Length: 276
Length: 312
Image (cartoon, rainbow over all chains, first blue to last red; front, top):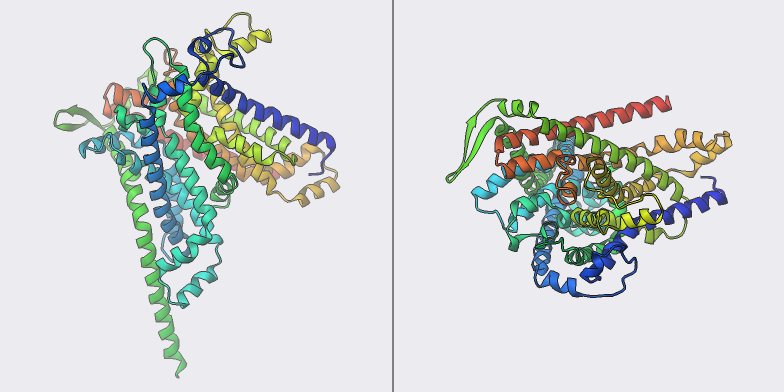
């Protein structure tokens, strides 16, 4: 756009106000996790903590067994990400590069499936998991999370596979490579950004999912972080200090992923859907 | 005479190669297809079946009794059901509209900004990747009627005289929940719209400038039509999420006060796993799906005709 200096100044002012509005509630949560209980429930609140303490972090891990929730979340999210990448890259490659039939209906079906709200499937799944004795197990979450994240990952990866020149596929075939060899020797290494994007989306979705985790894995030792944080409860008061200590820890891996993969997340989001 | 058999042989060979490739393709699709079918297609069909039955949980497992549309009859007559439909639609429409308008204004404003790109991208992605339960607890503490920081700030600015119990009255609880949602998801909308804006070629703006278009005309005739894909994408993503809203009211308001913030998913969960009415609960689930699909269609077609009307 033909820009003026005023426009640029307005841009910076809006951006900074917007970033401050995002950060302030975060700031409040983080400092609260370091305040002693008397300061957490004081009114007027102290905007900058007068006393700092790590007691809530100790209680979260000791009394509230937050370490267990972290372990459960890591196992579930990492396994889900692994299976989604494995299955979605093969399916995305097949749809992008192989002469299979009914591609368009398949892509539309994937889109429709990915929009179904979890409430639509939660009861039959609950009954199924109960019948086969899978309630309160890792697979009770890994299998549904894999299924729900596959459609979007297949879409993203299909678009990345389409960007690899088709001549490479023909050349590999002339050299005598099988379809599968062409896939994992040539196409997978060339579509790493797409794989990273799909991995981050899947990991974040599995890390944050609450509804199924609450219904399928309600036993304390099988809870994931969201369920643990939602059900943290004290005898008399809401234990905000412990809740926020756990929350701050749960944000750390996500922040690391976002800092490393930010460019690919955005390009995955836009290529996965706009060009589709 | 020699070329003809050679040609047909090569065609046959190519066809058999294509068949090999096609079969390899189906094999590569198979694992994803099995998982998706088992976890989504089968349960959706089974949900429809369950909604037509009376289901009871016995020590031997589940027993079904066909009751036709009786479960839907119960819903149609239930004030609680209609209230949750109304609340869910109202909540989804208001939050998504506010997020799109706000997101568009912010994206337009910061489109020309050169610095701070990396840091603002990270800051905007963090609410998107935040566990909803965490943000719900955070807002719960901010809104607290006794020691909440919101009361303190508003009192300091003389907006309110005495502390308010924000989650205590239906109207303010609904608004409080919407604010929490808007805070968490507007950055996501901004990111999508911003990357859409950055894909628009400068030439269009130069042409509009030469034609003497003012800012408003430029936005309405150049930016908006070229951005409709991004707007539709962000809007659809958000509407679908908003219609399934569960985590936020579960933690922030428990659907209250009363049933003021009881969404369809909350009601469904209550009926299914609280009251163990699996048949009626499934009817709620199926109704939610129908509603979501209907809203998607309306949104997409409204969006198409609106864009067509503007450019015609």
